[in-house]
Image (cartoon, rainbow, N blue to C red; front, side, top):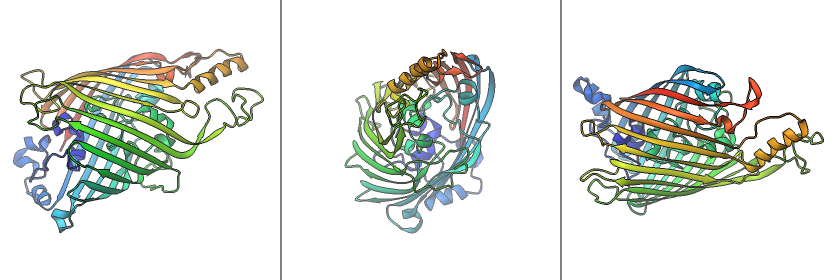
Length: 453
């Protein structure tokens, strides 16, 4: 897990970080990057926050708001405002009650006005804003964790989100489009257990030393549709076919005093035990587009994916930490084409931090995300044209390019102008207002502000 100054939105995660990577929680309960540090009495005039922290209870608020507008392309043009308020609390029961190795974490969101750029303007597969979700007030994670053997082994259970620990690139987190990867979001039921959805599960973690970690988790495999079935996050579904995820991590040169270039390598896989539809054929092997097809897709039991992640520092200023200088990242993943809408995912980018002497906490960077529409889904489109005689776009891929600058105004407060360009929205699907042509490529300009308390 990267350090607090990498992005204020990771404060909650750092408070419950694993021992190999954790920043110490300040004795007053106020993270180094909190707007409270700029307030009178550090935003704690009664001393209650400090008292709670000394007894193992920490809490915080993070507000993210942004203005986005597409100036060209998409299904329509225009702008919108969207926002998310997150509240979280963490309890160290060893400090509170003397129960060694036991901790608690919970967080909730108030998501507002986030109904639009991705769904109403572009109908894209790739995330445009990683705070976008169905407007609601909802519970997210709620779990207990017990650690053993000098904190080398941890057992976590409760309502969990996979995207807090699995398939994560630390250096990518500054970008608005960086999110739970499209290959899992598009292929798993309800998008899988990732923001804004969490689901009951258990997670095991083993840290043999500061360099290596192994994670294994079993989630309820369908968190439920966020707009209807599980709008408040309190559905607590336990009867759906499970999702199993595993990941190995290797970290190097992460210490503040390390002289080499820092990096993290991750290799993982997932398997969902549910039923998945064939993208092209019915049970008789007839194309679903054929007039003689029964219209019911052939089904497969289970779906599997593999992935790899690299975060690599390529320039480290003398005396600086692993999040300074110049860093690159990439995530790559694949899954079978017959039961997957997206069968290949790749993202990559570069981040510059502290390169302007007068603004050492600013960062800027560029990234891209590419998703490939599976061969079977593409073949279905060809079948639709052949059997209907009506021309329509053939899906192929979607790609997003992002340029972003994150400026720290005060500790705990950032402003972030951003630009994105979306190519082949939805994988090159038909424009609902002109079905004979695809939704047009489009440019998006935005400004995000994040305030952490």
